[in-house]
Image 1: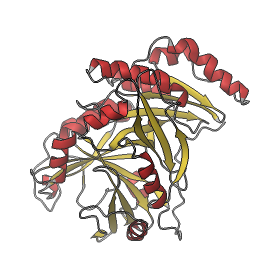
Image 2 (image 1 turned 120 degrees about the vertical axis):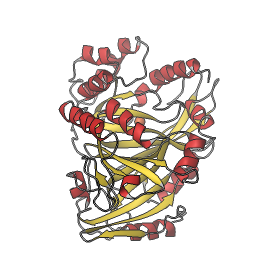
Image 3 (image 1 turned 180 degrees about the vertical axis):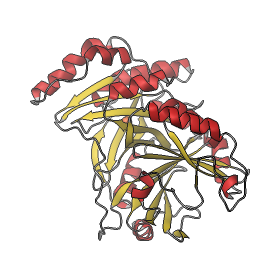
Image 4 (image 1 turned 90 degrees about the vertical axis):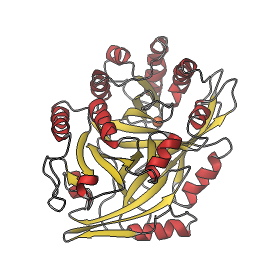
Amino acid sequence: MTTATTRPSVQPSKTSDPLQLIDVDHVRFHVGNAKQAAFFYAHCFGFQIEQVNDLTTGNRDSATYLLTQGNIRFLLTSGLTAEHPASLEVAMYGDGVKDVAFTVFDAEKAFERAVKNGATPAVGGEPRTIKTATGTVTTATIRTYGRCQHTFVSRTGEFDLTNVKQGGLFAPGYKMIDGVCAPATGCGPQMGVSSILAINEHNKKHPCGLKYVDHLVGNVELGKMNYWVKFYEEVLEFTMFKHFDDKDIATDFSALMSKVMASGNNLIKMPINEPAPGKKKSQVQEYLDWHCNTPGVQHLALRTDDELHSIAALRGRGVDFLTLPDAYYDKVWDRVNGMLTQHGHEAVKEDHEAIRKLGILVDADDEGYLLQLFTKPLQDRPTLFFEIICRRGSQSFGKGNFKALFEALELEQQRRGNL
Ligand code: FE2
């Protein structure tokens, strides 16, 4: 049984495969108010509010905050004008994921290959390079389901991903949040900087232990799952990792079907869900109903090496997690430890009582086990949420928890009057 502490990333050497992914460069969210959202994710999830690109750096159209934790980079973007795509999309969909960007060796070549494979370029997505005297960032963007897109990013010089991970500038146009104004703009000190510095300092002392994006799940319309599976196979040259049908993922009331697509090197896994008919409304359909009947990212799973520490830290910060029926823990240890013994693995090493008290979910397969827990929606609409996941050998997604989880989700749907 292995315990992966870092993402299985690609060595930074030249490759003949233009679609070889090096890392998840960033995940961009379109939000109603980037400044306030930055405080929410920093306060509740322990992110550093590291850099900004807004009026104070000469950007007249949008404001973007870079939030970091481990190898996770979130960009929170708000439009500053009514016509900006972020303003229009927030009006339609609420806050949510716009772009899952991949670092590649050559963004232009990756884009050309994806388009040759059938991708549609995003509006304004053609390759462009921004240069400074010390480095370049090249981006090129294709569309995927709904309003979501994938940007290929290649970086050189001071903007190389290794430098960015060590606290270097994310891209030209960004500045560090350190109370010092960008010399070119002659602006005054940025408003709110002292409170950002204070929360950053607190988060350094009290880490939540989130390391990287393990997987991200898309919800698509009934009958569209196989269309998007084909898209990821053909356009991004992903392969199918696992699939579940409505017999696996069903309760008395609702059901879904899911296929997991993985990049060539398993750098990122992207399950795709579609609703399946049930007695009542599927959670996937509830998402679609509140997302303008448009597919989109349902959840991001963030990886930790210490589930108990991360969940305790996040609960302490006020994160709202799904609550499970207490009966879950009556059966879980026989199921999980039984499976582990059957496949020659040691039992779950974390304190069982602490797991129950923290309300963490556990599942096992032939390769090992995993610990996971799901937040409630991160905004008013029942759309995007996070999963906090720790893998001890298992590479699956907690299939054994689906029934217990769905029952808990349905309880929540019932509370919202959406069942
Ligand atoms: Fe998940």
